[in-house]
Amino acid sequence: MNNIPYPPLRLRKSVGPIEDSYYENPDGRLVFEKEVPATNYRSIFDFGCGCGRVARQLLLQSEAAVGYYLGVDLFAESIEWAQQNLSQTNPLFNFKHHDVFNAQFNPLSKHEFAPLETENEQFSLVTATSVFTHIIERNLENYLSECRRIMSCDGIFRATWFLFDKASFPMMQESQNCLYINVDDPTNATIYDYNYVRSMYRKHGMTITAIIPPAVRGFQWLLFARPTSKELVEAPFPDDVAPLGICRPPANILD
Image (cartoon, rainbow, N blue to C red; front, side, top):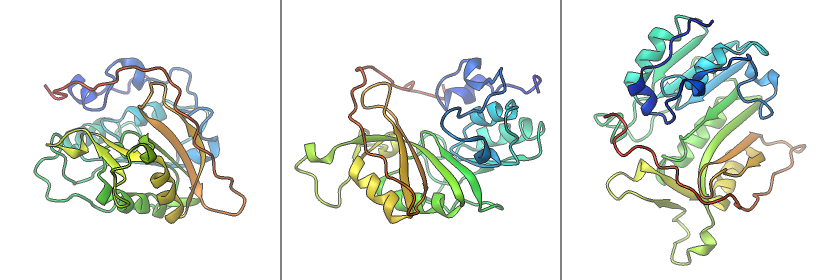
């Protein structure tokens, strides 16, 4: 497996860190070690897979076999590269273009929302890194519902979020639960009221079972959820006490 190619620099820039180390798994360990048990790697849906960072790490994973993997992303160039290069390594790994509008990565699409097209609707792990941090409020419920729909009964939903406490914004209406940073492109970053997010998980039949607060104050929270059952205990949101810092993406990612 050491001959698995690395994505080109242009595509790595579109998803964040560009160093080879972010695409490696030299010890063959569980990619989400201490977060997701080995039994949940049997079928994986990677929502917002980019050019295959997680997929490449999973291809190098030896501690638990991945029975099936499907990655979707709205950047067609990344999907094409991953399908041509990573799927050739293991035919159980597949990639599909999710054709929804994004000002930078899919500007010609006429769709704000599209169902998650899958052949297997029973994924034991649904992971979404830096996805719900870019979905505007009117589309949020649709995508949460889709993630729940494709989960197996013992599935885990792993997702990152930007969160804030709406109680500190007394001017916001009941129907307003998201803050935006870019008037020209609201999907640039979407920051949700944490109580609203919790209520949406409940509404769509998921219980948040574990929460990892950000390493930099105000940055990405990591939430883990399972299909709701009587045995599950909902995790409380801890305070964000991380140190202040800067985590800005490049201004022109594809330059």
